[in-house]
Image 1 (cartoon, one colour):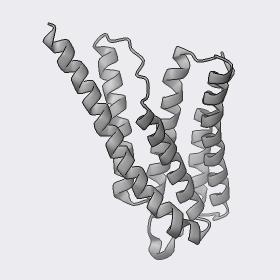
Image 2 (cartoon, helix red, strand yellow; image 1 turned 90 degrees about the horizontal axis):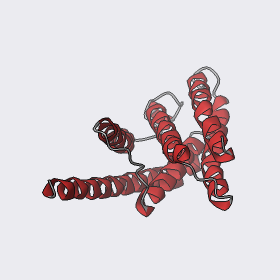
Image 3 (tube, helix red, strand yellow; image 1 turned 90 degrees about the vertical axis):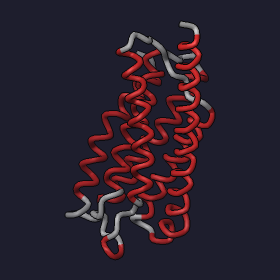
Length: 194
């Protein structure tokens, strides 16, 4: 197993720990720092495994599957919890707007369904992320990280997290439309040759 893949598996294993930390916030508000620290560590791990893989030419088929899977599991988990009013925010509001959480989760679910469906249909293919797809993941990470930070520092929430969360929603929609367009063209192309 390559080092980038080891880092990715550690990221996946940290997701349940992150979830447990979030669930403890209601009883112990200081766990917000733990949740934020774990998310930040996983985000840095995402950057690190990619850099190591490219720098030392350790890119693998396994890594191309598990790295985006780790991203999607983390994003979905963070979105679900941040969209719940359990953080002790003013007026008992959730840190992340429900519509933003739905947009981010829906895109990832649709991509996963597409990949599984094509795999079951006999297509053994690795779907390389586009530049927009990579940018979307980065913006989502920063937005969710700042939202977690915003549960600790009010100024970060108002001036950084909220605007970034809507920027993440917008770029997620654009990325989802690009993904749908690219693969719809692939289906049409193959269909025309049959």
